[in-house]
Each structure stands twice: as C-alpha cells, then as structure tokens.
Length: 262
Image (cartoon, rainbow, N blue to C red; front, top):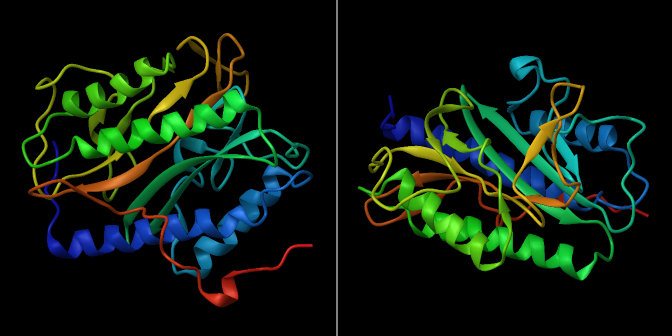
C-alpha cells in the first residue's frame, strides 16, 4: 500500500528531512584524512539526538551503527569502524536517517576527501545529475517507471553501471515502505504516485559494471569489478505539479553547530 500523508504527517516528515540535511552539512567539516568512520558515526548520532531526533538506522534489521558509511568500491551499508580511517582521494558515502516523532527522513550523499581523481569527480557529478533527473520526473500521476527511466537515461549517457538489486522506496513511519523505486525502468510502467506520497529516490551508479556482492559482514555491498561507486539520495514529497525535497541541503546550520577543526 502506498500511503497518502496528511498535513500532520507531512510536517513531521519535513522536520525529519530537515535534520538529515543539516546532519550532512554538519559532518562535512570533519571529512578529512585521518578521521575514522566510527568517529563520523558518533558525531552523526550526537548531532541527530541534539536536534530531538533518533537515528533511523541504529539497530534497523540489526545494523551495528548509527549511519551507513561506505568507501570507494563499497556501494552501500558500510559499517562504521574505529580502525577504518579516511584517506586522501577516497570517495565516502554517508547514508543518514533521522526519526522525528515517529517519522523518518533518509538521504545519502557522496563526498571526495581532499583532491580526487578526475574520473571520481565526474562520477559524483553525474550520479547527482541522475538523482535530480529522477526528481524532475516526479508529479501527481507519474509512475515509478518514469523515475527509473529518467535516472537510467543519465547513467547510460555517461556509461555508468546501474545497480539493479538495490532501489529507492517509500518513506514514512517506517524507513522502508512501498513502493520500490528502481533506478531503471520504462516510462508509464510501475506503481502510480499521487500528491501526498513520500518516497526516497537514490541512484547507486558505478564507474564499471553494475554487478555487486556482499561482504562476509552480511552488510557491506561492493562492486563486483572493484570499480568505484557513488550514491545520492533525497526523500521527496510528491506534489500536484512536481516534488518537494524534504532532505534539502541548503538550510543553514546554527552557529553553535559549526565547529572549527584544526
């Protein structure tokens, strides 16, 4: 079932999404060589809780972290570790969820640590472009196939591999709900979306082939050919004429949230 959200639910989803966007902005100042993924995870948890939310992913399906942190050829679901430290040129993907009064926001973003390789810089730019193309396809009466087709069209333009086993999803009082929102598809196919539906659109695109596998930790998903991968995601509200991005990244942090890092 695809839920149409009422005004109260939408306001809670907006607040959850706002905190997710702010958490991404807050963490950016710490993304430097030498920081461990566990330290990033702890910073995220502290920030989210300071804003009156809880971490959506903490303990979800047994996940052993507060946010997912994946590096380079890791596509998604990387487990934060004290021994895993960021290095110059790494692509780090932060997948963050926050729950406000029982409703969730969910957004992933990819960052390059320091100076990246030209092909990695392009990968991030092109994957973000695919996300925005998917969002641009949203309106009352669109289908999930319309969204997937728009994402896939951008990916194919740049010869990027489209991960097919992992998809976007509905968002609400649970992190993952109906419908599935694949990053591929045919126009006018799939479930129809209407004003008041809330979904996460999240392209996961690879520099190489689309194929993936899971590590022995039963969480981390990697590219089969060891190529680098990028992940971009927004939670959006379907409106009559388009989409409202709930996990916006253009909201300013409070002054006390900006920490000077030596």
